[in-house]
Image 1 (spheres, one colour):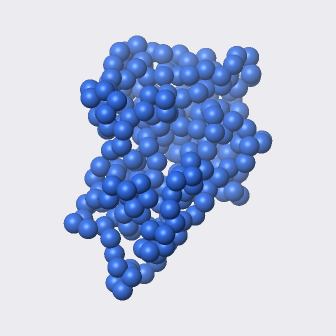
Image 2 (cartoon, rainbow, N blue to C red):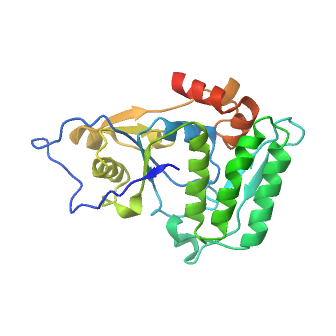
Image 3 (cartoon, rainbow, N blue to C red):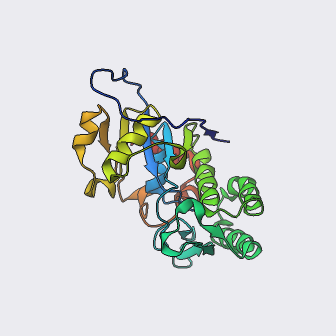
Length: 254
């Protein structure tokens, strides 16, 4: 299993220029928990030492927090959504950590059926079949969608040999501004580098990072070969088509 951190919230996550700690060399990625996430997301997390699971922001049904696009390895069928029915107790204001599973037995059957239907013919299916029961069992022990999504991501990262640390943002102190919050989360886990994906680059302001001596490192992925569909379909597609070792090698080169 991946290591889960015991980071403790602090009274203040900011540090002044005068008493800034020496560089830690830790790279941090902050990302919402996604269900069987896309390869672009998995690649970013795999490139980080610490994944801060952003679980205390608003849940979005249009995002990937409770669903994934899957594509058959043989191209016999078009891509499709694999969604996990989710209830939002506070409506649109519901935070990701508070979203609840519904129709759990049906969800377990559907997830297992769709994944076997799309990837059962892959020579790498036995690898997935070994770890999949653990994920499906989790459905029966929690009703929190965020925990299922986080576990599904760790399952994929496990294929790639990732040995980083996981901590949830709800356990940390951070400011409310979009950029300052990211800076504070990096400081809270002792990271001096933040991996910024293509989405974040559209709104993140570099000055707060510079002020706290946190490197803002851009992260993107190609669109061909193993990376085809990396921003649309679950990373399972590349893993089941090319195999974990090939995907891992490509990520290490990148």
